[in-house]
Image (cartoon, rainbow over all chains, first blue to last red; front, side, top):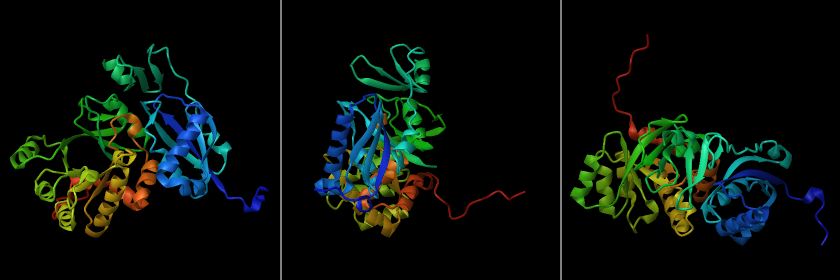
Length: 147
Length: 214
């Protein structure tokens, strides 16, 4: 089948998400999570209308694509993700745009600061660490100073 | 004040109350209600933290005692139950919010309870954590749609809560708008619900003394 000419193609929108929770999945894993989540909430017919796809990912940032007008549905579907690899996680929507470039400009890659509190994953005021029962604990700098 | 009406920063949670407040600030909230908090913090990262207490369904005297024993500055949530219990809860002085709507038994919340909630200025909590849970998502969406229909007719306060037990469970305003649109809530209704706690905690009186402008 020949592809549609540009004037007949649907318009698309791109949504920038940030993955919270410390787990960084691969782009393929993210694609499967998006597809599963959209299908679970809106069904196959809704997913076919929405055309969700993952177009870019770097670290904990992801850009997902959908048909114009379905951005809110995509955000709703992805906010239903509660776990990645068994750990609590979430897709936090950051911005919506018509181009990938403008969203990539909004990405600020944070470098973990391992020097202040060795063994802890620090970024800004936020600090994550692995507790004795092999589960993450989510703290702030002030919590550690208090401890 | 844009308020997240309920986060569970209790002893079982792996997220500290300060981290909840920090995340709430980044999500655009200026106040959170921490239910049964493990720590006692009034403000952090520009977010006001109110204490909350969830009272589960109990028999008459135990319920009244639980409400009476709760300190005055605490937001009281009551877990909904049978119709008669809900009516008692609404008319009890000091009860601010009804929660646990997806677990309502059949006929638990009818038009009379809705009218009473409007008269007594008792809010109803829409807990988004119930939508995130795949097991009770359908029930939650259908119950919340019914609740919205009652709210549109009887105008009792609706309050939105993330119901988060860990910080990834907290949602930002865009996500709340997207999730609430699943059961037909409009943008204006969402913002009214996010700001509704002030009206419940500090209701308007028929006569108010205001200072004269100098």
